[in-house]
Length: 437
Image (cartoon, rainbow, N blue to C red; front, side, top):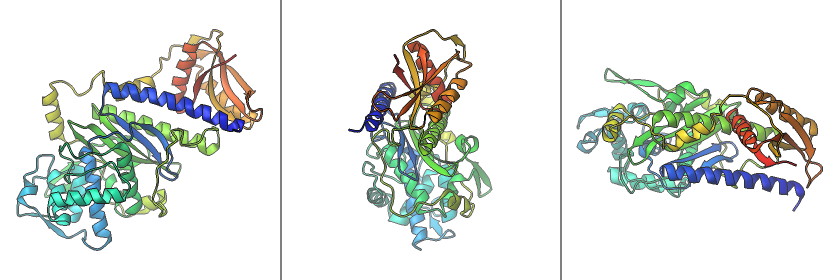
C-alpha cells in the first residue's frame, strides 16, 4: 500500500473510532438519537451517528405526503387551485390540525401550506385520501414510492406521522427524502421556507428557529411525538454548496436546534477543507456515500430563483408541546439528553493555561506543500492563544512518506492537547490528538 494511502487510512481509523465512541455514549444516554450530514452535490457523508438505526419519523412523514402531492402536481393529476374534500375520518384527526369540518374543502395550495407551517394532521389525511382513496391505501403508496427512492428502511402507515409502532424510518432515509424533494421538485421546494400563512382569517406561524436564525437555512421539516423525541431535517447553503442534515431524538426543540446548527457548521467547515485539499483523508471518512439520483441536481441558484412560495420548516405544535409538558411533569430537557452532551463537548473553558512540555500534539492537517502546512498550523495556534500560552508549531515530513508534511502543535500535555483540539473543533477546524516524540 502506498505510504500516502497508509496515512489516509490512519486518519480514517482515528475518526471512525472517535465517532463510534461518541455514538455509543449517545445511544446509552438516549436510544432515540440519530444524526447524519450529507453534501448534496457529491453525496459524501460528512457526519453520521446511528444513521441506519430504526426511528419513528413523527411529522417528518409529511415530507413524503408532500412529495406524493408534488408528484401529482407535476404529472397533471392535481392543480394548485383544485379543491379537496374533507371526510369525517380526516376531520377526526387529533391536533395539530386546522380543525376542518367534515363536508368542507381545502385547496391544494392551502393544503401544502398547512402541512408545512401548521403540520396539520387533518390536512395530511385529506391529501392522502385525495391521492389514494383511503389513508391506508395512500400509506401503501407512500411506502412503495419510498422504496423506489432508495429509502429501504422506511415503512409508512399513515399520512401524518401520528404514532404507529409500525411506522418507522432512519435518519439516512429522511436525508434521502429531503434531497429528493429538492431535486425532483425545485418549483415547489420553496414552500418549505415560508414562515406563516393565513387560512380563513387565522394566521398560523412557524416555530422553526433554524430558518430564522441559521444563515443559509432554507427549509424542510421538524416534528415530534413522544416515541420519537424532537426531530428535524434541515437544508442549508453556504458558498454555493448545499448540505442536508437530519437530527432525531432530541429531548427539547432548543437543544435539537443548537445541535443541528453545530452539525451544519462542522459539515461546512469540513467540506471547505476537503475542497482546498487540506486533508489527505477523503470526504467519506466513514467509508460512506449516499447514492444520489442520476438526474442533475437543482443548483442553489435554481432553487433560489424558483417562484417564491409562502411556507416553512415546521416546529412541534403548541398542543403537542403542552401535552409533552403534562406527560413529563417537568420542564423539557434533561442532563441525560445526548444532544445537550454533544453541545457541551464543544464548550471549552476559556481559562488560559501555561503550556508545560509534554509528548503530545494536535495535528490539524497533512499536506504536500510545507508552506501550506505551516500556514494552517500557525492559524490554529493563533486561535488557541486565549486558551494555551506559547503554543509551538511544527511542520515535519511524515516518517512513512517524506512528501507529506504534518501540521502540528507540539510539546503539549495530553489534557492540554485534548482541550486544544476540542476548542479548534468548536471553531470549525478538524484536528486529532497524537503522541509526539
